[in-house]
Length: 242
Image 1: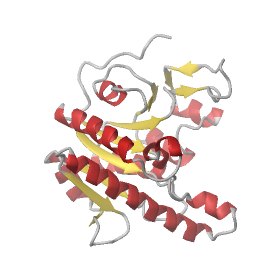
Image 2: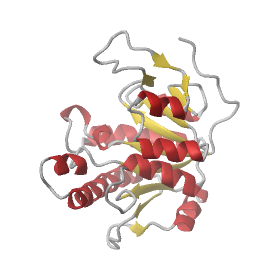
Image 3: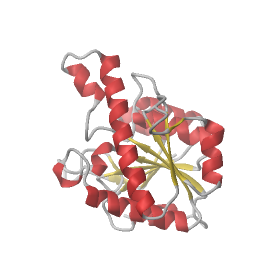
Image 4: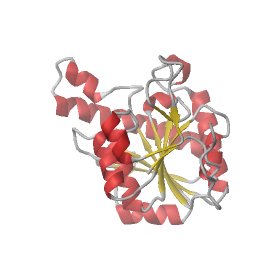
C-alpha cells in the first residue's frame, strides 16, 4: 500500500500519546527500564530536530480504572487510582529523559507539589518554548475521562499541530490485524469514519474533540525503530485521521 503524502517540513510542536503498556515491554505490566531508555533516546532525537514535545502517559501497566470498576470498585475511586498510576510512569520517563540530558517538566492535573508542577497552561507553553519536554500526568484530574481525552485536550490547549498516537500496530485497520491477517490498513481515514466503524483509535470523546477542532491524529507503531522520528519528519508513516 502506498505511503501517506509526505510533509514538506517537520512538525514544530507535537503531543505524543503513550499508553502505560508501552512502558511495560514484554512483561505486560510494570515499568521496563530498557524500554524507557530506548524511548527517551528517540524523544531526545526528535527534540534535537527542533521539535517541541509534549507527552501524555496512560497508567494501564500499573492500574486501569475502568477495569477496577468492572470488578466492583467505585468508578470514581478506581479512576483516581488510575491517575496516580500515570504519575508513576511520568516520573519514570522524566528520569530516563534527564539521563539523556533532556530538560523535562512533569505537570500534574492533581496537586502534588513535592513531585510535580500543577498543570498551568501558560507555564506548559513557556516550557515548550524553552525546549523542555513537558509530560502531563494524572489525566484531566477528573474521573470518567480517559488519557486519550487528556491527550486531545492538552494538545489543543498548548497548540500542538498533531496528536501522535503510539501503538503496537503500524496504523488503523478495519479489524484487528493480530486476529485477522486479511485486515485492511487505512492510509487516511476521517474522524467520522472512525466513530461510525467503532474503530479503536482513541475513545469517542477524544475523537470528537479532535474532529470539532480539526486536530489531526497519526497512529503509528512505536516498536518500529526510528518510526517516531520519521512520523515527526512528516514521512507519511502510519495512518492519518483527519
